[in-house]
Length: 209
Image (cartoon, rainbow, N blue to C red; front, side, top):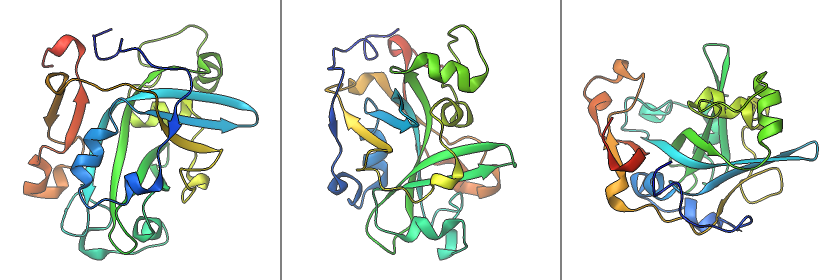
């Protein structure tokens, strides 16, 4: 693990207030989510992981966003709601991908959570992933982390300040030199917008991949 990942933190943190998500700058929010903990509690099972990779989506002008051009569908309607709720959608009919809705009502910004460092409830996460031993890829990738934490598209629209899905601050503050920005993954269809450096990661030991 790198020094960012090893930063001391308490076992329980403070749930982020809705004001955190209502700010205008989705890129800043995407960066500031690094080091925070995504937590779920389903059927009495608490699971969590530290957020180590995010991607920002700034509709309506972002061609990579589901809400490009203010496109409103049954799926994307949640993106137009007030920030501070989950946007979970099914990708390729297989993977459930978890996003955080940001900004004020009517402005469809969102942050995709791409990877976590597992923290609480690892046995539960392994069971959900069909694994028997801990693996480094347990929460590597948006589909994997959603499955590990029990996140399903039926929970899309869930407020992030309740007791089912939430994000909390446990005192981890990644160093600026341990964060790198690069282009987003799997959005080649977005043309020039695919090259925007809106993917943020905490890198191991400060080395570039």
